[in-house]
Length: 336
Image (tube, rainbow, N blue to C red):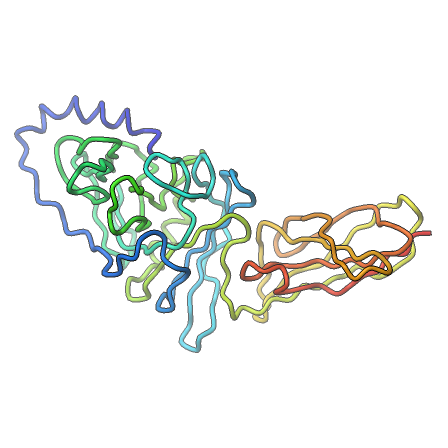
């Protein structure tokens, strides 16, 4: 919520004199990851049994979907929350650094939570904020990219964790730049949505974030993974595309629709940004993408005018970032 930093800093300066005589308690320790391998992590770690997956439909989009997955004792994955609507940085998801306005693309640990409101029941470390709580975003500071408690800003674009209001009723630190490399980026959180793009955080409704906080468990090494396109999905989640449209002969120029549903082997219907529609002309071995369509409550429908004299059509679902993971059956439209 860097859009509110200037206001927060001004308010903090005004209050500095009144707080000057107030004893400042020592900052609570902020757990630092032992693995300081830079930003981001190299994919979803094998030890992570809780994954929050965020995907935006296109580069530069400030809209996204968020889904929470949990790995069960038998090695299978279950969807626990979502997909739910989310907002991301004003430049979308991309190569984040200090002041970039991108939400970082990659995978980050979720290591610390906080909020203006009482702990909603999370097992993550949690502290209740007041006007003395800041996240240090000054690259020249010795406490850069850490939570600190002090009566005034640490400098730079440092962010107060209390004055932004409802956006920080709850928040979870996305541990971007755990090595605290100056200028590489700081203060990226999963927090409560204001209905607007963020300055690089991920935001969702307060009710959704409460549910996520109650679900998160540090023993399960939770991470958040963000990217442009369809959000991450478990590699062993088997998906099936059904297609309800029969092959047929159509008059030239007739509008036709491909339709069906996407489900997993556990019979869950899934929502995601897009599926893609491919065409193979008669006599050709090449499949060409002709369009995309959004999944809505697990269903899809794509309306178009079939090419002549005959062509085959197929819908594909990306699964784990490959359009070959799940495919519908092939339907043929002959044009007369």
